[in-house]
Length: 245
Image (tube, rainbow, N blue to C red; front, side, top):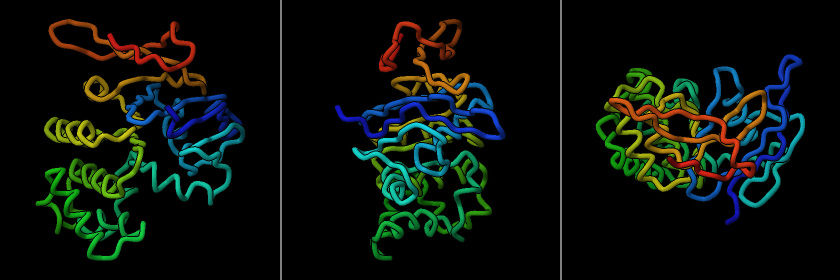
């Protein structure tokens, strides 16, 4: 099966240090790939590099069947691989929720009526229709996060790149987000420290450490309740084992 996104030996240097130092991955259709790693390991840098917001010093990115090198190559990638920023305030910029969710479809060429209908349908599907006319800057942190996801999904992308998607969400909103992601059928790369979310969503995991990605295991330690832990998988040299236990 042809990968949607491939990264080969990415190198990104910041302030003289290599944040990424030969990082490689593939994302297959329908796959939900978790990227784990310590704070500051370079997970956000990795996502930004995959969609051309960060230029690598070395390495190759192949997205949707084509190698992408310069800025114009990534215009199509950012339409097809939608990026959910870690901070919702970096992503919301229209006055009202419905306008913000409609922005992506408008930018992709839909007329006003079609874009607004797409936005309404997406908000309805996510259980957010009651927020349609709300002012975005007056939303709670959790509401902002879900509206950002609605804006991403309204673009009908082939893949999702999600940077800490449960930031600012309470337990009820986390369940809502998980339900939406599990039902959308999209391939995704998921950066999160939220272990229950990893347990619910991820089909495969990689660990970003010392600038490189290595296969990791997703499994549970059974106590009075379950915790999900990610460990390096020394038995999956090709990086494609789902490691389910």
